[in-house]
Length: 178
Image (cartoon, rainbow, N blue to C red; front, top):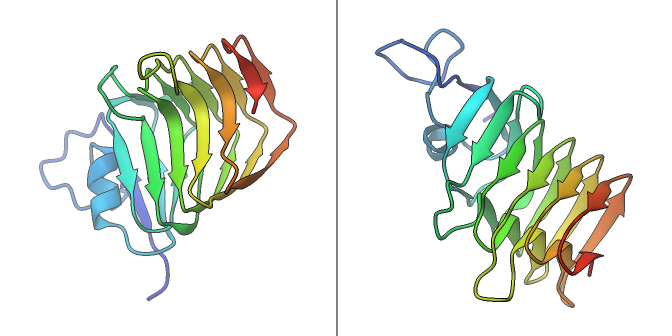
């Protein structure tokens, strides 16, 4: 089937939530659960207190980093994890208050652009990265602001690779990119 667009608006007062523009989901997680491969998830402005896991390629599209915030709520999870995903993207969000990572990609191919990733906290004194590429991931990371993370702005393990282009990476505790 062709990709579809699923809508999310946390301010929706609709009682029927089926992911259409007229009847949007109120959580991003609900949209990810419904999504098929390569679907677009269009997210309206607001603060979404969620920790998300994507196991299929989806395109998460926020309404802009100033207005669309995913807050990991300091739970013991990254704000967003992509696991075994071949394709997909995230753009137009602020991701904050994650644990270990703002965005963690494991064995995944992902584009990450036009976001703010900030304020992750560490697992003991390790991890706490804005973006983590691990287990053979391939990432394109561009036009992001990656600031104030507990350990590293962008961590790329030895089995992964990433293009890191035109980002502002600052005030991370150890390194900008490692």
